Image 1 (cartoon, chains in turn blue, yellow, cyan):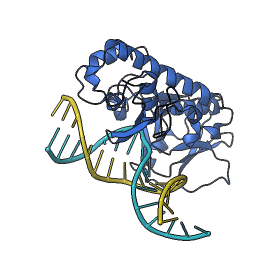
Image 2: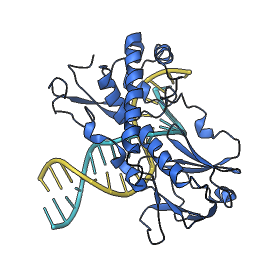
Image 3: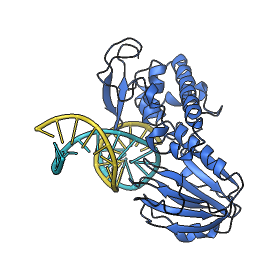
Length: 270
DNA sequence: CTCCTATCCTGCGAGC
DNA sequence: TGCTCGCAGGATAGGA
């Protein structure tokens, strides 16, 4: 369930763990069956290398070394955790052994995640069709509005399209549209420039805020796993169909758009 | 090309 | 208490 904010919080946690650039000493593969089989042989070429940094693109994480990178995607239920010897759990796929007796575990019960090897200086094939990062200046209202003019899909489907902008998942798509007062089912091509402006502003605001709130609990890295990373106490519409709008009191509604349940206030959102 | 639907998987909560 | 059932959802493949 992690969206961009949650993945960024995980990146910050991993960066802290790797600040002394430990050496990868061994990769222990417990079960290779993720979305795609984990390529142990290729990943083993990273053994002996130091982790130089941890980067993020969209919801992908990259552990960077001089020989190449370990790419991971958390899918729905993927987590990284510090796993001291003895802390083995169901659904642990991989243990990464580092110098200083550090061991990291990748665990993913639903197996929607990805672990892959990226050769040095190569662009991961997964990045080929990705749109701009939502928190970069390239994601501007001018960019979004001109792109949406040709889109014959509901606006919510459009902003969840990774080719339009990366990292906006179902929860924050609903919340950003509520904040921008736009109905999720509104045709993307019919947004006004003003609405595109509002929407871009709210997406940036909500993602930034979520990173800030998740990041504040970073001292306990384990706290960043699963859905506990969401600032879910402050959801205004997500999962609240039938309950009163926090703004006007009108009952909130739900409808499936693009295969995803969507929540909105019929009075506040136009 | 654009848009839509099905698919992968397991845990959890609702309902009986 | 214990069972079944449907939903959750990121990304992608394949069909219309």
